[in-house]
Length: 423
Image (cartoon, rainbow, N blue to C red; front, side):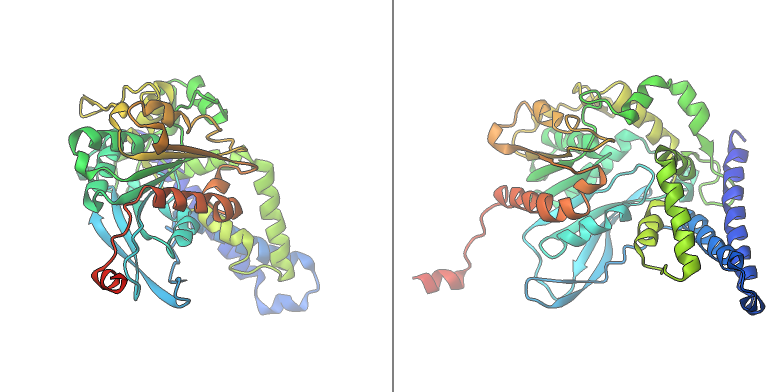
């Protein structure tokens, strides 16, 4: 079958490297070698440990690892993860904080489907939990979805978001991070026409390619240079027999990871060399900065071929959202129909993936929205990752987003006890 062998060859290479690492570590760790004062032995064991961990992480979905949080009452509360909407290609997760009254801020975090799992937003979710009732879109790895479940493209993605918003109701505040920003904007506009009562109260778009041509980057230039035929021939493969999705056409996560690594090959190479040296000296640990970062960065997932190709063609090449001509099931979605949902954009001044200008374009598309319901922020010195995680997010952007949510939430009604006391 077309490209199935290529998929299996990639998996074989990954599996072989994992085995070589484990073998080298086991071989160089024999007690008898401790009597030989040769640093090459320790280096071999270290190389094996780092190599095995690197290649094994590529096929493991990371854990959310959010077990408890400290709330405003100063107490630690257990966090329980529950699926509230279950679908073939993705679930709606709720992080339930035990022993705490439901927060008035109900937030839906729309995670990207761009090669990594939703757990990439772990620190974002963790930072919101003390102050919000948090829901997250948890997209599934395409290689694990049987062909019988059908297709999944940008229109299906948009309709999934529509269903999630309907389920959560009109008091929801949506935060879309990176790739889903244009489709989340389209889903909101779809609801504005089809089901106005289900619209969220606010929409925060963080570093998303609403208009990729507003400020071209290497990512958008690549989409322009390559034809769709070339892209399909070079990037699309068929899942092998090892996984439940056997036969499904996908854009493999391993291929995406190779692209990520090649963009900063020298930096990654130095990081791994340094980690081997630290491991050989006994200075590394399971939870050191290198392992924390790469355990997440290396964990990649396959995307359905139709989602990847339609994203490139319709969002980047044809700029359907940017030109306000995006359609769902043959019906045009008019972003100008958004008249009540407050919209805020967040961009990083040093973002080299979705550069400043691409996301703020959403505000010009919202022609039916009054200016007082529009807001924007450019974070100085922040790159793409920094606008939703790290110091810039925690110290500057998160407080602004929460203030925006509060400004567009209904004022709490005083309860009867307070009213009587006031009387």
